[in-house]
Length: 292
Image (cartoon, rainbow, N blue to C red):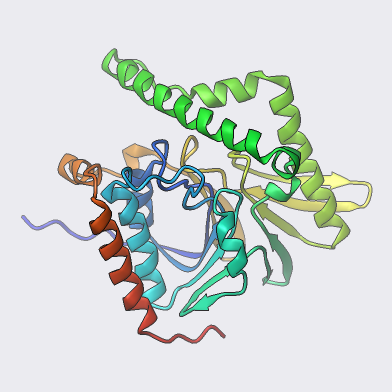
C-alpha cells in the first residue's frame, strides 16, 4: 500500500540558529525531518549555521548536506532566506549585503511584522569573551564538542539500559552560577538596547537557551525571543498569523524508517561534497527572483 504524503504545516516565518553543521553534536537528521514537515514563506538563519571554527572536510555526513539541500531547494523556489552571520560563521560577515536569488546575507535584520518593529541578530556582539579572548572561546568550543560526544555515548548506554536521555552540558550550565548569570546578563542587555530603540520584538540565538518572555524595565518592555539550537535543545521559532511560538522537536512526532536514518550517517568524500555543493549553487545561480 502506498504511503499518503503528510501535509506540511504552513509557517509565515521560520527562525533557526546554532545548527553547527560540520560538528559531531549537530542533530542534522532530526532537523531534516522537521524542515520537511513545514512550508515557510520566509526563513531566517540566525547565525552559527555552518561551524567554520570546527569544520573538517573528513566529517560531513549526508544528513548535513541534506539540510543544505533543503535550504537551497527553498531558495530555488523563491522562499526568502536571510542568513544572519554568527561568531562560528563570522567569515561570512565580509559578504554582508550579498544577494543571490532570494538569499540575503547580513549581520542583522529589522522587520516590520504586523506593525511591530522586530530586531533580529545572532547575539555574540554582547559576549565579552568573544570580544577580548577569541582564542579562549574557540578552545571552549572544542571542549563543548567533546562533551557532546561523551554525552552521545552516555545517552546510548542509558537508552540501552531503559533509562531516559540526559544533557550533560545543560546540567552543567544550569548548575554553575556564573553560567546562569551570563544568560541573565545576556537577556537583560539585549532587552535594554531593544527597549531604548523602541523595538517590540528582539530575536537572537548564540547562548543555546530557547526562550520566549516579556522583559520589563523602567523604560518600557520588549518581547525577548531566543531560537535555541540544534545541538542540545532542538528548537526553532515560528511566526504564524501574527503570533510567535517556540517549536521543540519530539522524536515521537517524526516517525521515519531506520534505513533513512542510516543513510543520513554515511560519510561523503571531499570530491562528493564539492561537486554536490557546486551543483546545488549552480541551480540557484541560474534563476532570478523578485525580492520585493
